[in-house]
Amino acid sequence: MTAVKTSFSDRPTVTLLAGDGIGPEVAAATLKVLEAAGSRIEWEPHIAGAEAVEKVGEPLPKEVLDSIERNRVALKGPVTTPVGKGFTSVNVGLRQALNLYANLRPVRSFPGIETRFAGVDLEIVRENTEGLYRGLEHEVVPGVVESIKVITAEASTRIAYFAFELARREGRKRITAVHKANIMKRSDGLFLECFRKVATEYPEIQADDRIIDNLCMQLVVRPETYDVLLLENLYGDIVSDLAAGLVGGLGVVPGANLGEQAAVFEAVHGSAPDIAGQNLANPLALTQTAVLMLDHLGQKEAAERVRGGLYDAVAVKKTRTKDLGGSASTTEFRDAVIASIEAGARWPA
Image (cartoon, rainbow, N blue to C red):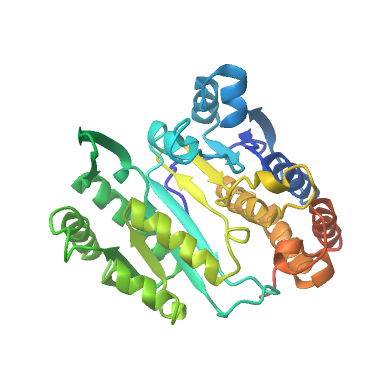
């Protein structure tokens, strides 16, 4: 699953960034679930985002980066990013500082959550370091701002290899590169060219491509026709959120940012400050993200127990949180997951 080429001890230390808003609540619930499942982790907590700005004057302290570089793995809750002003995105800062070049978003239908589509099973792979998200902007003259999109052969080739290796490991049969090369012939054209070159080394995997607007239309009509999607940074951000809506929203799906030397596993939903501290938040996304992390750490049995506990808790309406049509609080959902784990729950075949 990951790009990190390393092994871990039987009881690794993991950097914990609980985040802002509902972050501390969903993080606390997730850690309790992991403990009940028998995970073997030492946690090293740090602050980032609004809390860090308030306490140390910057959103991404050096101590956070040093911790992740040392531990090689982090679990991160939601961090607020101000819109149009304020401090820069902690998420983008982490990706660039740690060279977390691959964003992975598994999007799968979750048993018990009713949506318009059944059987959605996508892996969305997003190049994480360049494109318009490099943030290279300047004012040409008053009232005219230019934003520079950077696409390189190195990054495009690297993310293509990541996607094909992922597909090969998971036994997936098709990768679709998503682009706008009909208009941005040089930048998106380079991304597509690199994808096609890498595809020749994986003849057992079908490789095709779609224009981004067409792909979005097809996803909301027949998402079951797609398998692995490979996208540059901005398109990947948009499409991964769109795809999350197919299976219940951002509160359902996990996410990971992966590089050669580090991995940051993060919930992809917002910090929801309007419900912070009210015991209403849904910890499902962060707990599913922690399952990806457990797999990455080689703690497969614990990961399987958590999957089973989540399945049982979501299958019963009264133990779902309000956003999923239930009435459970954060801690009630947590306790239901733990009870299922202790009863020997397993993810259904």
